[in-house]
Amino acid sequence: MENIKLDFEQARAKHLLFKSRLRSILFGLEIDQASVLSHFECAVGKWIYGHALETYGHIPEMHELEKVHADIHTSARELVSLYQSGEVDTARNGLVKMENIADDLVSLLSVIEQKVRECDNPLTVLAENISFEEFEQLLKSNVELDKKIKLQVAETSKMEERFLLIAKATQDAVWDWDLETNSLWWNDGFKELFGYKTVEAGVESWYNRLHPDDKEKVLEGIHKIIDNGDSKWEDEYRFLKADGSYAYVFDRGYAIHKNGKPYRMVGSMVDFTERKKNEDSLKRAYEDLELKVKFRNMELERTVKEYAEKITMLEKKLGTLSVGN
Image (cartoon, rainbow, N blue to C red; front, side, top):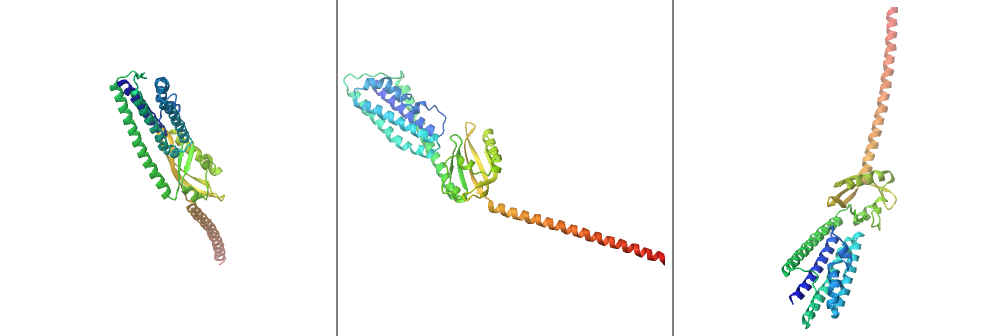
């Protein structure tokens, strides 16, 4: 009976480890994805097809467990695919559905274990030759990892919630660029500032609206920051609006790093078109004033020269008269 308990506790621990790995992927941790994507490669799959299906196959729930396990990995592949395509929130929200399916597998393990115990001559083949004490330590480690990742999920969710609240409160166009999937998210301020009713999800929504005369400079600058592993970027340029005109914007972004490499950038765009127009008007007024002053100085110089010439002529005439007398 001790071997039966150990065998099924190992299966539960392996299932817990699978859930922890899936969460790790959806929250950006670098781990091997093979055991999450394939129901044959994961530890529970190896337990099922290594000996459990053969040993406990006479119990109907064992075949139901095999199906539920395959369904779990189908859902896991869908969540990972959503995450990789930039639909991060949708993928993480899908963990709730995953937990419900996972609970079914745990329940089936308990049912199968109980029926095995009720058999007259139960036969158990352990997948791993480890002591019960070693296994309990493994189980404890998995439980601690599960708690740690759940805490990370909660903290990350709070951070994301704060970010979304700020994005809603500001009048700026706030953006979030996933450098790994090349997807780009905009807040509602983007539509309000530039007059768009809809906007594409990809980074093309930004690339394609840069003014042709500014595009090369802007892209060269931001990619230099990314390639060099720096954190801060800012630039001023013209950005296409829905009505076909261009707004003057000040754009600032911050890179978020993972393992020393930027994997995400967040930032905001401020429309300073009116200020730019005022500055241009002042500049033109100043230039007009400079030109007027220049012409006025030229007129004064010409007048002074004419008076100087007249004075010289008068002095010559006066000199001639003096000599004659």
